[in-house]
Length: 103
Ligand code: SF4
Image (tube, rainbow, N blue to C red):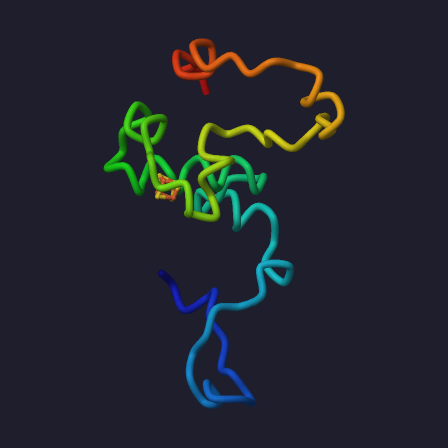
């Protein structure tokens, strides 16, 4: 990491130490050049693949349901566009969900 994206903290426990600059203060092109995904969901997907040793298949198989990223590990937000009421009317299809290996 280049010092370009660090700054000296002026207060708190980290005062006088180099800390990461706030991402909003960094030009978009720099963030892209650094390889950062442009959306939180893509970032989570990338993190899960990294956590799984670089394997998309292993990320799919992750069983650590307590992880804060687990519900988003396939690169989709399962909460988006759903309501609890609509789900209650739809029977759960475990066979379909267990064979879903698409991203
Ligand atoms: S959900 Fe699983 S693969 Fe993703 S970061 Fe958590 S433990 Fe790793």
